Length: 194
Image 1 (cartoon, rainbow, N blue to C red):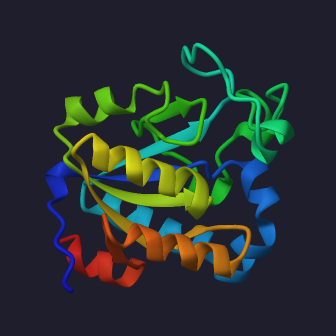
Image 2 (image 1 turned 30 degrees about the vertical axis):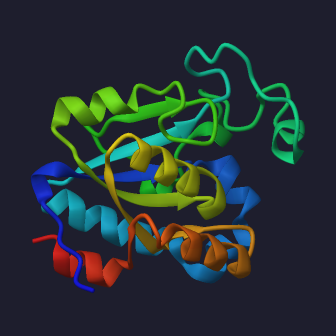
């Protein structure tokens, strides 16, 4: 299948690629080379004037009326010290750091839309299509994919610009996501973004 990208209505979402997260998934991030691939895609999108949006987790962001407490993830992040805004761990990894003018959107849960204001940024820019990238494939990327579909956005998953805790988990997530988004990689996307 050929991927088509309309530059004016497509945005690249770079999600949760923060120092604390990269450290936590370092084995797969290094094995896959996803940071290098993501930077290659970001540079091409910037060159072709696609909107690049950085979505960052900050458990203190937004106005979430209550936070879940059950499950391993919420036990691990209790207290909000992971990816805390203003700390080195909360900063975007230097390989994929934002440049001047690129929006930073802070979210408090899995989906990039959770208490973040992302939808307003997208609507104001006339965005209808999203390229999904980030860490982890089975967390922010998948959750955002579901949420985006429910909100009427069309999505493309850049498989080599994502990582999970294992290749198997990444591959399972990609397989699940294929039913509701286009699946692509950096080289195909670079050919499609003209």
